Image 1 (spheres, each protein chain N blue to C red):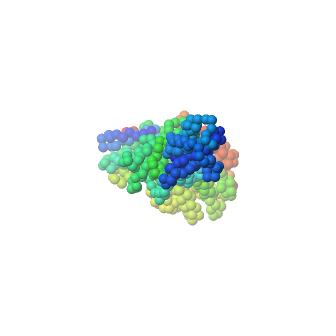
Image 2 (cartoon, chains in turn cyan, red):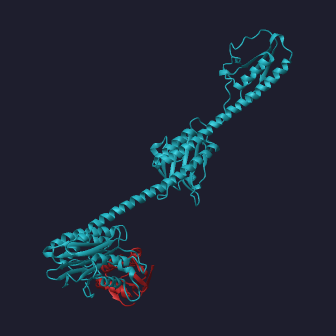
Image 3 (cartoon, one colour):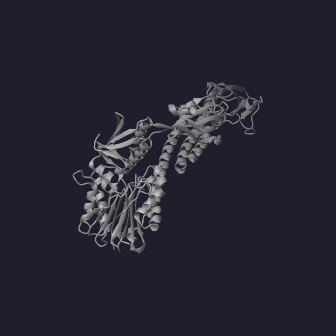
Length: 532
Length: 103
């Protein structure tokens, strides 16, 4: 940036004032001429304007050449009126020449600084504008495009590109471009032999000119040679080391010339603002993603819980059941069914592992169980058909289901059950004695087709409690001092056997909330049922 | 937690240190299947230093047992502590494996 030569036809106000003062003070006519206007070669009078005053003819004419530092020389002409006064006209002419030269130079400097000031104002305004843009536009690509457009406009660049580093793919991605918008989305490897990649890796700005042999577009596409300015976008966290997160390139200048150190400084200042915005945007996107995932997990949890029957509303028995997945969703489940002749079906399942894979198997199991339990009277038949329904899915996922299914028949005071590898099923009798309902087979998915048997034991609907729970409830209660976690849970139920099922289940979960040993969290389920 | 693989005679012995759970079951599976692919057929998993097996761990044992049997091999489980042995019994998984007291 530099001030342009003054246009001589426009005499600066300061020069004009000086000439007026001399004319009045010394009573002389003063003329200022130039030969250079429009390159016509015609001598043009710069001062005074036509008709400004009437010149008196005659008198001695003294001329001096006025030579400002910048621009062509001017001719100063002084004519003493009325044959001259009581002063030395030669001396006045010399002084006036000197005054005019300095005045011209001062005027030139004022003009130069005014121009510089307006340039700086434009740059400061650009920085403010960028701050506003970054604060008001949430989408990174939109903000980048607006900012790059303004930067190109203010810095007089023909083209521009803004590259953002994607750590996941280890590539730089063209996020915004000016005059080459069609390239947006292009990516280059971090280790590529391009100017953009080099600036990113080195973290240092670069100015390249055609004469230096490296000019042109910063990437692989062919482009006409032009000046290039490439600066890294850096981000400095409040605590920690500064790092490069992208690159801004400007290519070519609207009015010719090359990029300067001053341009590099300005673009670096802009890049540091963009760096902070990029990082904020990344954090915002991460936060939004986490919120989205949390919402989806909550939705999945609610959907899975809706698959389970509401124990309080079940009118076939007095029952309470609770499932608490280790993650948002899990593989534990229970089912309660009203069967013909006043019988009640009770199912408790534990899909191996937990989380979404287990939840999918659980959803399959509970829907298939609803169908087969209403279709077949015998528990073993139900498990056999469930095995058929789930076998392929279980084999392909290497999962299995520990499944207990009992049919309570109050009229005949009996309980029939099939137990596919479920370890924790008991009857707690009125006197506090317990009966384990042992596994009749290995879990579904392991036992194999047609291998399910069943057992039958007496059932006192008024006094007996059916207790089922999964290992997640008891595994962390292992004390290692003679009482297993399972025994601790059973003891809790025996001690509380006269309370309501709801109170007993509440006590069990309170017990499980105080783990004694460190084992990975698992889904927890407890079901307590008493006949009506 | 980790696995130590050793060969005693014709038997590949894998010691399970700590727990066999969802977080490390794939590692055990990979180590055993690598040896199965290399031609080994006799396998023993030693639970001398194992305190806990979750349902995923049991699942991978079942899966390995099946794959080894398909190749004409055998898988034995050794040194299960009282609780783990009870777990196998309660879930009827003891019917799928040859469980031995010690190596």
